[in-house]
Image (cartoon, rainbow, N blue to C red; front, top):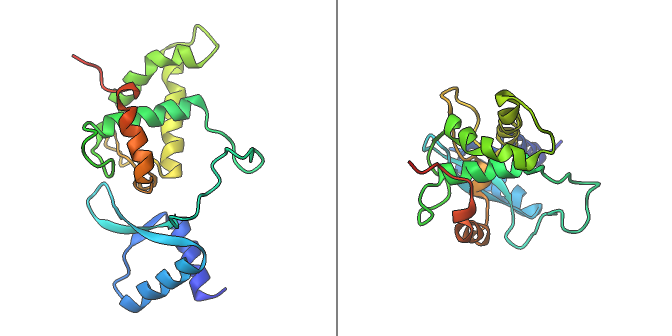
Length: 188
């Protein structure tokens, strides 16, 4: 395998990676990325460090599920989508600010926002309190694995992940316009 292919595979596997200190290595990586219609994007992690992430070129639209590509992609469940919406709202308290990197939110607060929605999202009744939150906790783990939420640091918080930093300005504008319907912190 050529060095360029190895670097691209490594970049995809790591999701975010430190900016190479060697300018030659960075130039070689940028060239390899350009050859496959991708781009390197600066991402500020939750810890405030600058890293790079592999993204699609602006003129390339990845498959989004609208062309009946169910054999390629499985649509997200309602639990995962509403969990992501709640995490966005809790980690992005001011829509006039940039979405990424956002701020940390307490996982318990996010789950407390979601628990009342359980009955609307599941046809089963009579599930105990743990059952009312287990789907959302599983969704949080899934969203972390996919990079929409930052990895668990063991501190009981949720942070937006690097995949949110890749959303286009058009996508963030849509989120801003629907900000008030995202499940958010409870009013005191």
